[in-house]
Image 1 (cartoon, rainbow, N blue to C red):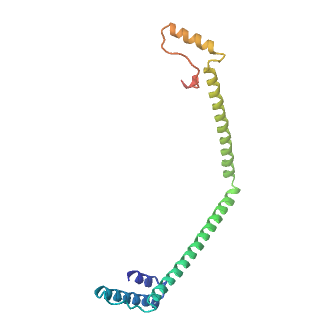
Image 2 (cartoon, rainbow, N blue to C red; image 1 turned 120 degrees about the vertical axis):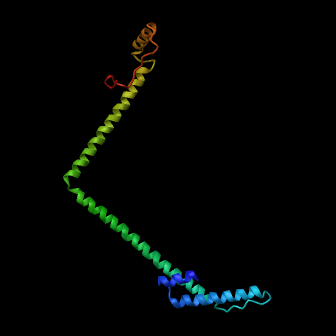
Image 3 (spheres, one colour; image 1 turned 60 degrees about the vertical axis):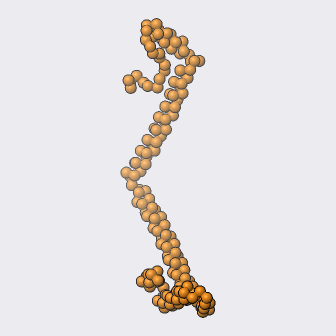
Length: 167
């Protein structure tokens, strides 16, 4: 019964329909209570016992469908407003020199970053080849490491990506 009262407060469902359904529910409760106390008696329900309850259901379904349609319309309008706002912002930014300059700077920085990454990869590949046994500098590396070993140094040289300016 509380739920039916909330429908009345919302004002979306006609009070006559709600009162009719409430009356029918009360009648059903009375019949079921009588059946509970007198199990030997037959249930006596009218032909329209559920029609009033179904009428409330149908009305609620219609209200819900209208609300869903309204929500869909609001979402559509929100999408349109967002598209319009994006377009307006794009048009406002289009002719501004500071935005154009920032876009050019971003492009320049991206290009330099790509070049630096490519250079780094090439350097890594070159150092990897230098440290391989088939390198042209293998003899020099072996000679230096042998000299270090004979003078009692417990380390050996290898080609590295660290430059002398970073040490």
